[in-house]
Image 1 (cartoon, rainbow, N blue to C red):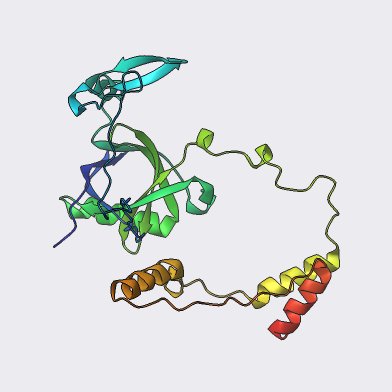
Image 2 (image 1 turned 120 degrees about the vertical axis):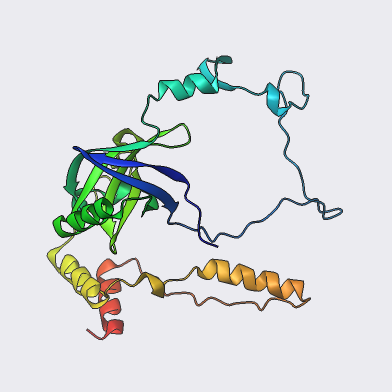
Length: 258
């Protein structure tokens, strides 16, 4: 069964209009656990309980509220929220184009495929133009009552859309103590050895080489327990530690054969 689009609309820049539909390009592979009562293996339910009276609240008695001060909420109607977002609902308006490489990876959030809704010609032209130019279109996209900053780029002959973080959503590194104060400056020898080690470990990136080993191990455990078997105990080899950076670099290079 073909995947269903999650959004239909129009990609727009200048006087160009490209009818598109959006598909999720990500399929999370996490393991879904349920909370279960140990006593009888019964799954647990989560209910909405009012803090004031302790009673369960029905869905038709629930509204969206914004806390304007401690314990004081301003109630908002869904239609009010929708109206405040304006009429962007079905259009992705490209505001500018940038080099794809200028987008900091910190900004990337989720990825979607853009498909042809009808009139394939403008879609193909835009995809090829973005591919040849190495550019991405930056615009805005409203989805599920939220506005997203997006980047539209070419990917394998298709158009892809990435939702981006807004600048004020990214926490500055200066807010954390990431580097030790008054730390010793690296020596040229240490940096040279580190670069040599990095060079020796450099490969052409192939995402297919990396699998979720944790998920595979947990699924193996689940299958074994379901069959009444015991999971084998895995012993991890403890790596020899050293606090001497130069010594660690030299030994790493020696193990690498360089």
